[in-house]
Structures are given as C-alpha cells and as structure tokens.
Length: 244
Image (cartoon, rainbow, N blue to C red; front, side, top):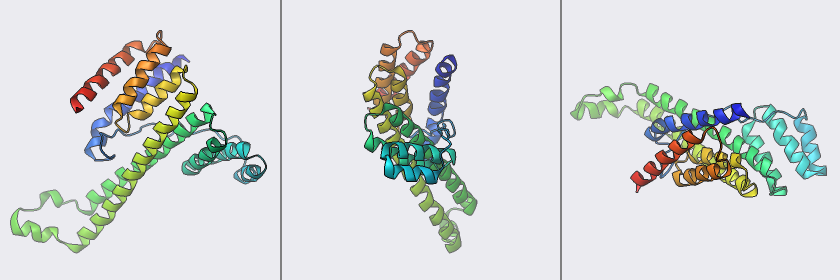
C-alpha cells in the first residue's frame, strides 16, 4: 500500500511533465493533450485460460467468458482485443466497478500505443523531408519544395499522424469515461477518484481532474501524499484560470 501511494504521484508527475511535448506535436482536439506514459503498467495478467476456451465459455456463460477472454488477450499483449472483451463484459455486468477500472487501464495502455505510433510517424515525416527547414527563400525554395516524391512521402506520413492522434485521443477519452463509471459505483473509494484525475490529465480535462483530487482528499485526508496533492490542486486551479 505504501508503494502504491508513493507511486501515484510519480504517474501524475510524468503526465504533467509531458504536457508541453504533447501539446507541441498537436495531438488531441480542443485542449492541451498530455501523453500517457503508463504503457505496460496497466496490462492485466493472464488467467491461464486460452483464447479458444474463453470464446467457447462466452456461449455458455457470457459474463465469465468475456472476462476470461479479456484476460487471455491481456496475456498475449492484444490490448485492443482485451478492450473489446471488457466492453462486452461491462455490457453484461454494468455495475462491476473492478472491471470498469480494468477497462480504463487497458484503454490507457491502448492510447499509449497509438501515441507511440504517432511519434514514429512524425519521425518518419521528418526523415522523408529532412531538408525542409533549410530550403532557400523565394522562388527557388518554392520550386524545391514542390518535389513530387518528397510531397508524396510527407502526405503518407501526415495521414498516419492524423489517424494515430485521433485514435489516441479517442482512447484517452474512453478511459476517462470508464474510470468515471467506476468512481460512480464506488463513491467512497479514494483510489477511484485518483484514477479519474489520472485519466483526465492526458485529455486536458483539468476541471474534472481538479474535482477528483479534491474529492480524493475528502475521502483520504490523512494520505501521506496530501502535500503533493494540494500542490497539484493549486496548479490545476491556475491552469483553469489562465485558460479562461
């Protein structure tokens, strides 16, 4: 428990430190994006059930089958499939807070994968046209810049960047919604409030993050992280004020 408490703010700090980079590359829509650096931290452990047997179980007992299937996919590193299986599970058992939390974790991991692909595509675009920033001014620069081979490579990379940024943003938003549903089912669980704050930061939803952290302190006023949380609350209030 002590390790988990002290690790919490390491996660938040990483997310906050990444804000400038995420905003600079333009991922997200309408708000400052923060990258999700929790890849690999949220993957569930395999239950030992094979994918085939879990799929067969779905026909007999959907709830049990979908959960086993999700864990089997997690064990194989198939995050997108695990998300799909967990979505099917909570569709059958919508009041299962633990599985809403697990779904949020997998959605954050999936968002991180899409963001990694985004940065890779960005690097590919830079490699495809490394001299763009060094082009001369005037008509000569315009003529060089219309090289059809360079344009084609850049367009392909840009399309991938757009696709991956949209996918990352979608998964970050979905993760926040999953954590909010878990918190609603467990209104007195401080960890659930922390999870909401953690998921709200990557999508730049500072009001939600602020409210969740304030609620966290109400539920766990003696937390050893109280000073850090109060500092974060102050910073979030300043960020919200400056954005108005």
